Image (tube, rainbow, N blue to C red):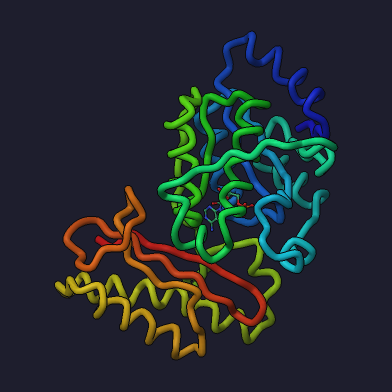
Length: 280
Ligand code: AMP
């Protein structure tokens, strides 16, 4: 595996594999790798002739300076993990490389980007995601890019972006990888103290409570959301949002009559976590 820090180095490393007609897969990440990241790398390795992983803690998508400052970073460990997963190229640019002086362009996605994370974290969050993802797609020109269903709204935003701008690549969403107690893996989990770590599993508990009611035939969103909120309250968690939405539009539903996405965001201590589950 080669680690590259500049756009020029990456482009030149991609030229020969592309001439050979190898299928290029991109896994965009912010590092602090865990098994969720590994699952995306493995899927890319299975399906592509050349695997590029980007590692960039993108300041533009952070709405809180303290979140950006405390975000876990360990490039050496990440490089070892990516090498273990047989990644070909690790692209780890500096902020100045991605946003050189005078940078003045933003990609704005409407529609699916407007509610939930878009509301809680502000419009700058998904603008930041859309802008960096567009840059990565342009720099790498992958045939396929891999994202985690853990960030369900992000996947929808990226799909909307690709559709609207006719970007010539395929988007693959990979299932959420969980700890043994059900907590969705996240780089931010490393910031939880032991008692917060125990309470954090209530996000998964809330989603399961919703699924249980739906499995029992309940249709009312109000009733289902009340059960999910009760599961959070048991762990003294007050959600930023708890929502049931149509997975294709992210519009709230009042009745669960088809595939419905349950989403939750909550702060556990100072660490903000999100999770979601498709209710079937
Ligand atoms: P991040 O480094 O947190 O920006 O995540 C990089 C990619 O890994 C994103 O597409 C995430 O959705 C995905 N990801 C993060 N956590 C998980 C997880 N627990 N399971 C599957 N994918 C994940």
